[in-house]
Length: 266
Image (cartoon, rainbow, N blue to C red; front, side, top):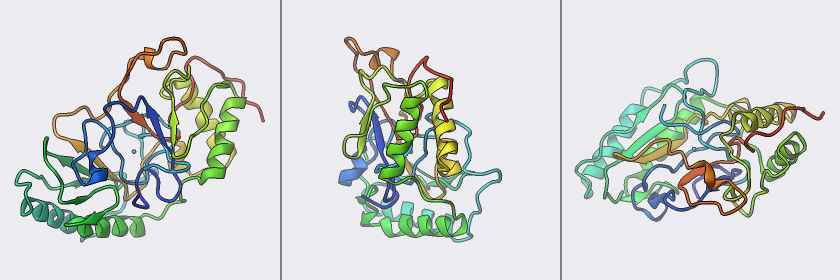
């Protein structure tokens, strides 16, 4: 996977019912409905829309309005041109409706893929036809907005252990590159879970942008036209007894368990 896919060399994709939220872009197809973060995603914050990398320490989508820093990200002069070149390349390779990507205040690249479209290249790995433009734009944004990298596997496990010790004992451990919250009894978007996650992130000295649930500058977020940007699964998805099915993908720093905890252990 691309070093910046909901986890550049170190992220964890958190799946809350794998159902409808896998990115078709991984196989060269367009982003499937709702979610798929291709850039270094966010950390323990809540989920977000424009404005989520997989692998150890990866985070969940950032909270709406969350930023990676106190000021807007720098936008190198050639980034817009590179993104426009990518869209033009796509339009010339079987996707005539592809719009130009945009860059938000956090330095995150947003790609909106038309429904039914098949991107010419692999948007997850940034390999194949046209993707060289996205890769270059990503590198330019990263160089202009350097930040601490996301947690690695060992750091992420320390974070999970801290969360479990501070009121969210059922926060699930990752399995490979994913953390599944289905039937765990833990709602990663619960305010109490978010609060504990941020406490632990700060305690362990993890990247501020990750702790706050923000996207890392240069992340590439792919969405499909007309699909929800921030799908919310029903509460029953998380219940331990007879959990229902849902459809939402989060990343590791998403918020932990619902209704639990507030006494922080040192």
